[in-house]
Length: 90
Image 1 (spheres, rainbow, N blue to C red):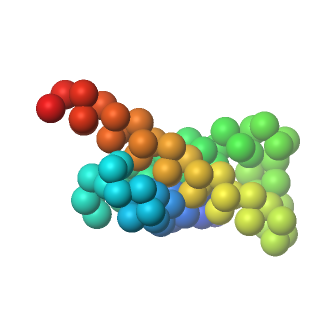
Image 2: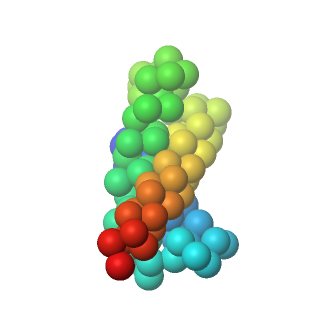
C-alpha cells in the first residue's frame, strides 16, 4: 500500500512541479513518469530514514501524510534532474 501511495503522490508531485516551475516542465507524460520514479524512490527512502511508518505496516494518518510528502517531493526532485539532463543534451 505504501508503494502505491508513493507512486501516485510522485506522479502528482512531478506534474505540480512542472506547472509551478515552468522551466522544468517536460510535458504531462515525462512529468508523470519522472514523478512516479521519484515518488517510489522518495517514499522508500523517507520510510527507511524515519524508521517505518507506512513502510512498517502502520497506516495511520501521520504515516500516510509522510508517504505523500516523500512521494511528492521525490517526484519533483527527479523531474528537476531529468529536466537538467534533457536541457544539457539539447
